[in-house]
Amino acid sequence: MADRLRGVVFDLFGTLISTTADDVFDNRRLLAEDLGVDADVFERVRRETREPSETGRTGGPAETLAFFARQAGAEPRPGALRRASERWLAATRRWLDPEPSTLEALDGLRAAGYRLGLLTNCSSPVEPVWADSPLAARFDATAFSSEVGFLKPHPETYRIACQRLGLAPAECLYVGDGGDNELTGATAAGLHPVLIETMAKTDLAQLTLNHEGATWAGPRIQDLSQVAGLLST
Ligand SMILES: [Mg+2]
Image (cartoon, rainbow, N blue to C red; front, side):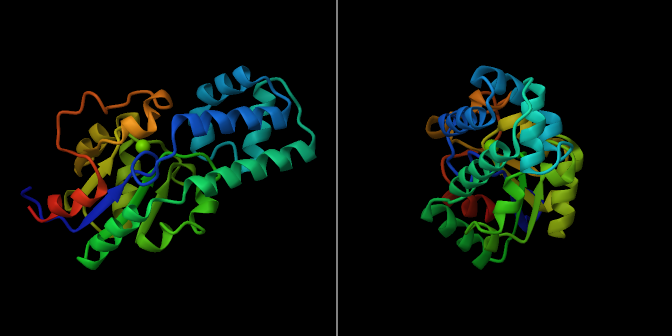
């Protein structure tokens, strides 16, 4: 790579954590039950309102759940909302607990002097739970769609992530499993994207439209321990 790479911007789901599509669907089914909404209707509402609910326009976890319920034709009681909100935050906290090998790979990159950034499309519980995750201490900068106000692959998301990292896009490797055309977006924004192949484990393609896992023609790695090798070439 011609540019001198000084940092890495990572995707979260399917890249740093191995939350599976089943984990997410199970959680949604339980949230629907808490809210008194039919599970299939809830699932449809989640899909149809992904943009507002993952860019902060529906508010925090409890407000967002109330929004989902109303979209599904229900008016949840405060107790039900509280219960669902706690469940959503607890599940997110569980998901943000990475494998020891992930933390090792990140620590290795930090020890080698690279700056690390996070750029994730996510609903509102991820940002408040992030500080409790062992991942948090490893990152110099974060950009959550829920606070940035845009979803990847919007160019603004990459610009903000790099700016917060204090690096030019050309100085950053971008590592992701390919959801939401994030690798094509990273290329357009001037970063150096790499696909991490975690699909067999997580099956997240069921959850995101425009998954590039099967079609990406650029560089690929199988696990995070390979990132250091890409930076030094
Ligand atoms: Mg992902």
